[in-house]
Image (cartoon, rainbow, N blue to C red; front, side, top):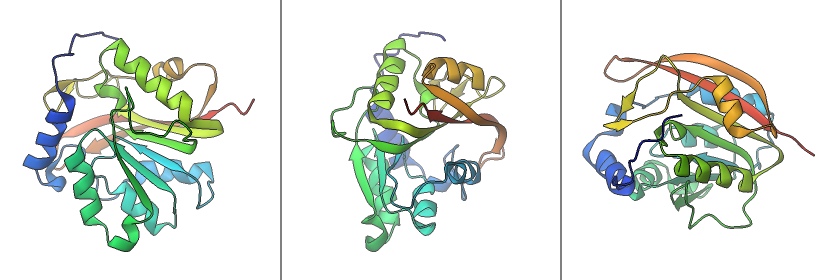
Length: 217
């Protein structure tokens, strides 16, 4: 993995600008229906009261879909205050009550509770933006802190054939083996999917989706 020095970037400002300057449906990662994520979540066979943590939630429609499917214990976290505000505003007051909204940097958390334990960690498009080893280590430390034994991890990122930059930022490309090595031996790869996503402008964006289960012992 490359280790570029991007410490001068203020990521909170960057993503707040992105979400304040663009309509959600114009964003390069927008999905009207996040089918690959929903299919992978279905594979987990979770109880409807399971704790689902959506990392880098942005203004994703995944939250809407999960609520429609009956999930009632969702945590949406993102570094962008504006992104979460837009997502919260989009939902009805009744549906928004099923979501805990947390503004935080997943690589250096300040606002996630130390006692938080989740059944599922879902990340579509966060990990590939973490180009520094320190960021990657912080992300992994948070993941291992909150995902319970026997819990699940879904990570979807640009594949090796995917884009090399997104939203003006460099990215790290992965395949399923690289993500497995990143997570370590405590996580078993259950399933992966090479997925060609077509963004709102018609561009092709190859992704790899991965589903892991944390060892229960």
